[in-house]
Image 1 (cartoon, rainbow, N blue to C red):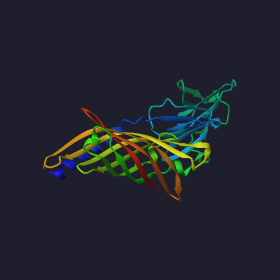
Image 2 (image 1 turned 90 degrees about the vertical axis):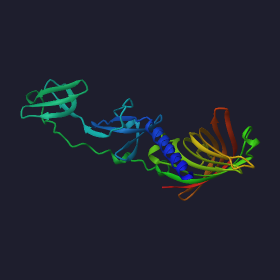
Image 3 (image 1 turned 180 degrees about the vertical axis):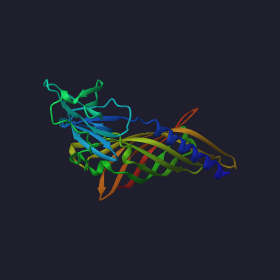
Image 4 (image 1 turned 45 degrees about the horizontal axis):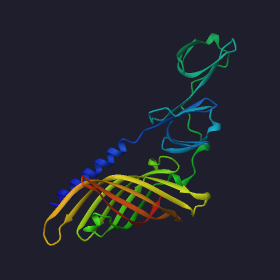
Length: 301
């Protein structure tokens, strides 16, 4: 019976994770360089100076001043590249576009206003040639290893419970496993993570899984003064056994998790966090919460 219930719980938990992941926005960014090279990329984040994008699995940070233009209104994260060719007419005017088709006496080009046909007799030489899709300039390749790493780790927490839960359960002891994938970093300061958590008390056992969004803030550019806060949403399954009898009750409920802490200790590829954790299970009769300390450690790669 326990294996069946636990298996159903894991299936439900996986469905929640997949559902949350599927609803994450997929954004694209079109970057155009002065030399005519255009890249359709995955948008990562931007600030007043830098545009961070991902192209074919690699992350790049491009100064906005190095771009001719950029467009963040794209709704797709598909990646591709092409180069705009310049066509100089004999009357002195210039057109830019991509070569869709070349014939012995004419070009068909794609421009921002549509397709145009140009006779070669109307163009100045040398004639443009169709080029292969360009590669993203490696000079903009991101070398910030810390922000391009996946983190995995373990956490241990001690949460004294709050009324009304404290009337039957004085405190929760918990351990958890978490992962923060590099490809789910939202911005330079925001990171998406997933956590599985096991908590127990004298008459209560809880399995939880949730997605969280972690915000990091370093004060005065000092690595030691590195703080974080996170908010998480997910589901939990609790098994409660009444004292003095063999009666047991189980239930699945949504949960909310909020944390605030310090993460300034890093040794080689390992990192450590200590913070204050607030964990609430939402039921029809209200919220049942615990609040206390959590210590975490993990590895970045």
